Image 1 (cartoon, rainbow, N blue to C red):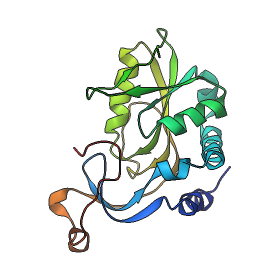
Image 2 (cartoon, one colour; image 1 turned 90 degrees about the vertical axis):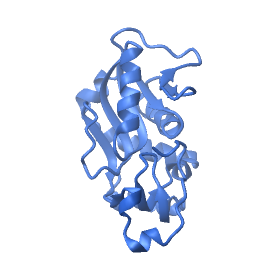
Image 3 (tube, rainbow, N blue to C red; image 1 turned 30 degrees about the vertical axis):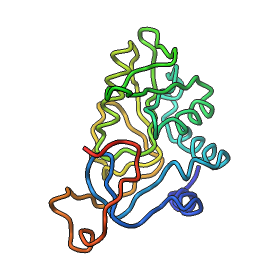
Image 4 (cartoon, helix red, strand yellow; image 1 turned 60 degrees about the vertical axis):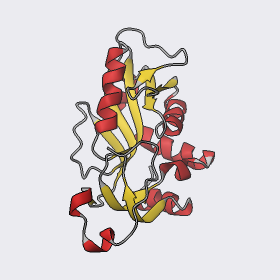
Length: 195
């Protein structure tokens, strides 16, 4: 099992722990950003992190999972690696029209037990949308896992939730930025348009 320091070392080694003024997928602002795509671009590192995350899941959850589902874009790589770590099929949701759905021939049999996997959870909005899409497709999300929980433990996903690491970095609305952050131009490094 990896320690929090070892996990953060993986992010630093990949230059994936960024500092500046970032617009998160939720629309909130932050002085730090974890670029999970960078930490996952090394297949060996992605495999190590996924195995560590799979080990953190309670045994009863691991045993109950039929399939891993993740939302595109950010969840695709870690979802695939979690499928490998758990020995389960992995598929992903897309939202070409703004609403998550299974495409590319992916389908769930009624009652399929799903582990939802994301890269980062901040507010839980994407997770809740993805969970609703799985339910609409006939699946049952029994738990969620992510590499990083940035919600300060506040994200309510409606299912048991296991992050690999919890990183508490303050977030701000655009109209309540501290002066030092407001003085830096904001960039949007994620894959989803700001809310």
